[in-house]
Length: 324
Image (cartoon, rainbow, N blue to C red):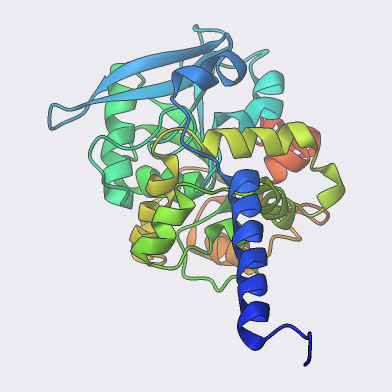
């Protein structure tokens, strides 16, 4: 009589291995939401502050922001981060600019320590209303408005809708045009599935975050553990993963491109030559559409040149701000 395992026994063994592997993966990659308070000590040391922002409909949005440099500056610089990022992406620029200029950075609703929008609305129009309320509560008049990626798209739309407030514009690998991506980070590929969104709210492999950050850098060797920690931990801020899925679903590339010719503010367009998420062809299109613009491309940088090479990129900003 053969002592070879039966087909049923082999299947049960395989099933056991599968269950064990699934359990091990669950333990390794389980990443529950973290309350905002647990992240403050590491990611919001001074000069970070929090504002209870009153929105037009009466709701109150808690906002994490930093207001640095001389308050005597009558035309402060406001910088807006990109998707899945936070105000920390501008730290290199702020260190340089705040020596002589007032510089304001903030976590947009849905990201960083600001967390989910109290309105549950991540459309460009909703962000525009949020920014208008934020600027009003800080009593800002004229400003230099800059942004990267999502923040860049919001910045140029705001400049078109509120020209009296924007003295100059700085666009860094800005979104808002209908330009085909050459590559999309894995972290942005969330199919529109309730089950997958539910799973994404429970599991977040740190290697996935690591790989996604490296994919947006021109030189992946510049990505270190501390940088990945920041993206990973702030993504875990309670509600941010669901907010990211909603924002990605509500994007409307090219919807407001018709507003570009209305912008008369002097504009500096900075781009990473190795940006595969929003390729440099977009910089050319912005330059053609904006009457008073100039372009500078950084060949070795990717989608976040202000973070990857802050020294070179901020020098371009200094030159732009001191030009006639």
